[in-house]
Image 1 (tube, one colour):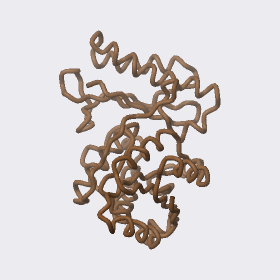
Image 2 (cartoon, helix red, strand yellow; image 1 turned 180 degrees about the horizontal axis):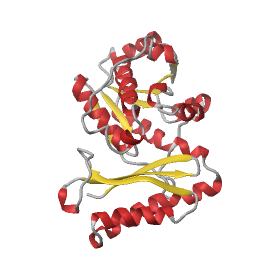
Image 3 (cartoon, rainbow, N blue to C red; image 1 turned 90 degrees about the horizontal axis):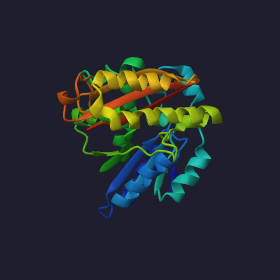
Image 4 (spheres, helix red, strand yellow; image 1 turned 30 degrees about the vertical axis):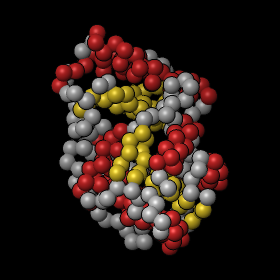
Length: 280
């Protein structure tokens, strides 16, 4: 595995790999890697000649400075994990490499970024679009891999790729869960042992709601999931919305769309966790 820190080193390494017509796959990350990330890396490696992974905590997507400061950073451990997963090139840029000048671009995603995470974290998805488009420009991948846990983010990136006419195929990879059912997340590192046990209630409620969806209306399902999770003292649902998985707009009935997903955000103590479930 080759470790590069500058744009020049990155592009030299990729050019060498592309010289023989190799396909480039890319996994952008913010580090603090776990098995969910490694699943993306292994998928990327299996489908491409060159697997590139970036590790960069992007400041423009944090609307809360305290959240940025607390975000876990484990670069040495990340590199060891990436090498074990078959990564070919790991890119560890500084802020000045990604943003040699301030990125003042403002994207218009219509209603996609006005709901759920976009509503709760103003400016977050604009920052995501800034950094991912910049990384796409630097890496020039043929394919890029994203976890389905960040369902709304994937929709935003697909729209950004379309708007900017970037020649990359966005691959959405299903959620990787711990044995307990808890969705894997770098934020899980911040949970106490007891909080981690409590947080399993999130996925448990989602799975149960899918099993029971034929017995309850969509609104009843929303109410039941929220009530079930909020029964636990350490958990507090910020939102649970059932939406069309393409437009991300709320639906009122199970028959309103052929593609429906439930997206949830829950505070477990001070840690904000997200998850989702595809109903159909």
